[in-house]
Length: 391
Ligand code: N2P
Image (cartoon, rainbow, N blue to C red; front, side, top):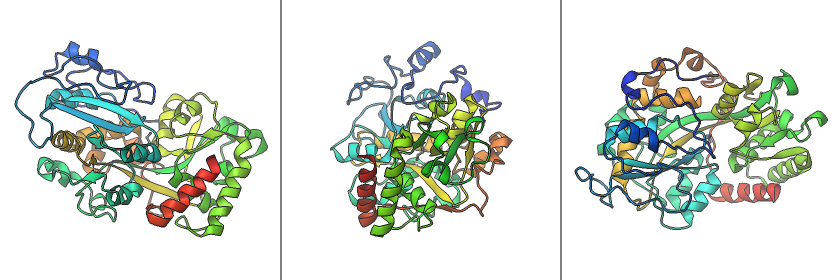
């Protein structure tokens, strides 16, 4: 529904207006744009989508040393969710910072965590969801941020500073936030979708047209809400009921996915998708029959946060990027494109009004939304229930 409206020429100075999503297939390919624009320090090659596990070597010796890094390279390796950035922010950051950015994407917290647990990484920024932060801290997988390089931290709204998972933003900086709900095609599924029943007990006519999220927290948490249980339950009988419910509808599902449902909703291949708010709005941009609802039983709210993996090669450059992202104009550019909520209210006057007044993007206080945290026993039990469902 929303696209960036009139943008700031200052932020658009070096690139035109390519309007491509940075999805799982279409990683940023801005090399040509940058080279054409004569961006200082750009070393050639593809900016993102390495195609293998190791990022390419840094641009050799250009400009002054960058402070705060372990490796003396003008390089930044970012690992973010698919479909979670516009395609101007990275080129413009490269232009203003004289750093080269490699940008790669993943599509679930489980995938990201498994990658981080597998051993040392070359990524400098990852973007886990808040509910996984305690696990990252416990496993010693992220390191304290260089806050001295982030004067824009003061732009963050108070509620994103005084969090239970990282008070004071010592380890994490909020990127965007959103809700979990249902994306539905009003022509095919009807206009009256308002309950989790639509996806957890789908009507026979919806056979093969329903997808659920391939993500532990959303799948288990929302099924618990549908069953009228606490969305934080770790009771064995509650989790057994969730497993029973979702397993019983598996034959009717198109599948579990976190990164294909935007395209599938847009193409009217999927008619009902458990999904994240901004993703569904990105589908709606392409297909006006697509709508988003937060079901009446309540749902989940999440904050995705930028963090530096322990021992990352370029933590100084990571801090520079985080600081850039906290600029209201940059927040507005990202938010207006991805249709998720911004943690920087100063960006709101710069956003399209139809976005800031949309209760599906900025839900009113009375909407029943829980923020879940996955730790210890809960992580283990929920993961086991999830594995039992998807195996
Ligand atoms: C972006 C989805 C990010 C939200 N496509 C998941 N926390």
